[in-house]
Length: 288
Length: 238
Ligand SMILES: Nc1ncnc2c1ncn2[C@@H]1O[C@H](COP(=O)(O)OP(=O)(O)OP(=O)(O)O)[C@@H](O)[C@H]1O
Ligand SMILES: [Mg+2]
Image (cartoon, rainbow over all chains, first blue to last red; front, side, top):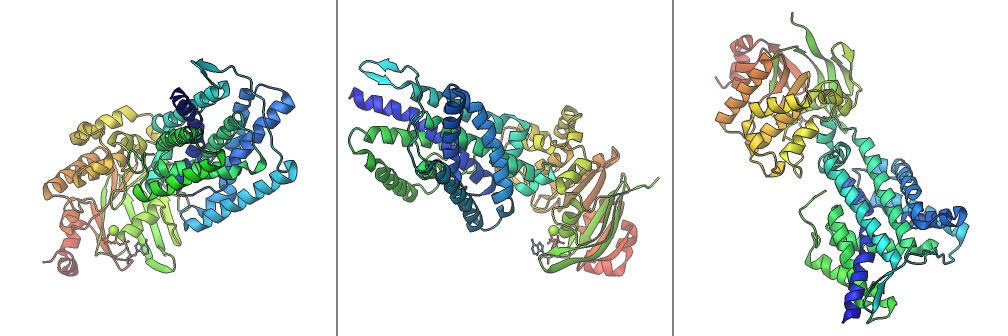
């Protein structure tokens, strides 16, 4: 019994990181109706950012966060101008194709450089014991950082002038232009924030699990599940749904082989999509 | 004394392949209320869109305080002092009334007098002060129109451009809103107004333009226009 409770708590910890990863995806969707299919390799870029910074500079893994965040932001602005700018407001297939093309290029580059070998970053943080069970230190730190960044994003969107401009563009782009908001710049900034968040979530995942160049797909899929459960385009809903996904993984882990978790996740995903087409955690539509 | 603030010369514009405006010229004098009237589909909204920059003019020029602003983007024009209250209001429906007003003051030119502006807007529309925390999309039609006008005023504009202010509103409210416009004009605001209700437009404006099929049909002072037989027949139903 205590074992299940413990795996549920651990699920919450890991789920917060999944939720953060999905917030990046859902932010772009919510603001410009674009599904960023290069989200997976971007998460992996965060993992390799962590790997390179720790192995080359020998710094503590958590010190990799600021450079990964900033690097992700600029990569996002670049991605906007390369693959998103001309697709905004066009049929969704166009941005799906352009971001998928970026996905293929990134994965191709990654495999050319690193192959498909498994990488692992050593993180030594003491765990916290609760009775017989010990919660791994990296899980605790990663979840705290994910929660902090999620909160920072929420605070930015709701309490800063620029964040309110982002929400205004999401709500009505033409009206946003009319009140003097440079909406193109806001879109570029949004993609920048989205990728910064995705890279950081990748970096945090890298402190929890080993990874390869090809890990991106499964995290893209997890982000999809979370985005849909969380109600499209709603960052806070994505965070809650991420926790739900983590709890689900934690709860089934003791009973089924690890290879079955994805099957169960996507089975429930399809069911949820049928039962709650608007998302499970959508507080209100377009809550961004 | 009558200095032209906004001048539109030979404006042509349209959507895709379809040309809607075929050379519209008009001027808005500083401190005056200028009206544009015309039948449904005449091109009034298209004219305002081309002026505000939400669609790109094909030909012609737009001069503001003597500068050519034809190619400026919409947000740059907002920074220059344009405020368009668009047809259908276009509020930020998922945001609160307070946030809508705050976003109205997004241009840097509005930052200085923000608190003053907010006071002024709440004096004009006391109803909005009570509704600050409510989501704009859940307001009544009349209240939404108040937010739209208030949001336009928050930018501290030189010219307030309003499309179909009276559409769908109760006569009492329309009357109140026109009283409000009068007050704003009296403190020096320039207003360019598109209005369905020609009686009303001619009653409140200093000068009016009549647009038909994308061209200027005629123009003049309200008294002159309402004396013209073709205007009386086609627009005033007399
Ligand atoms: N987005 C659009 N795409 C294509 N055609 C359009 C578009 N908007 C307007 N039109 C066409 O342009 C013409 C002028 O429309 P506009 O909206 O300027 O008329 P209006 O004078 O404002 O009419 P109303 O009094 O009904 O508001 C109409 O024939 C309309 O069908
Ligand atoms: Mg119109």
